[in-house]
Image (cartoon, rainbow, N blue to C red; front, top):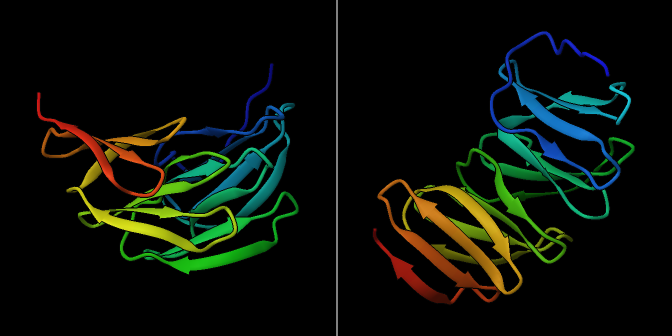
Length: 157
């Protein structure tokens, strides 16, 4: 269908928007946004491994090693929030953005306020659920958290 050369290797996973757009960060610290036809529609400095896309098209990525930023479809910064050293968002829904910050999992509202911070260990992966989030840690533990940050269950396989 199309090809795109970002000029540097991708640093993490590709995030997709509801409209078929894709977003990714390259190792040279650039966030790229492409529409479904492969045309670059966003290019800006970013940090971390991967962005996340909210249902309304807002892109969330690290703007520095410790600051999370929300970027509108036009490329304008909507908000910034200091969360601590992080590789960026791991999962997002219409209710929350989840990111690992050290040994903590942080939940941030789509409007940019901190919902909660819970120590679960270094988080390597996350998936949203209807009632919160399930995370995997580098220690091998899987933890389910409710939308208020309460631990629902924990399993170490």
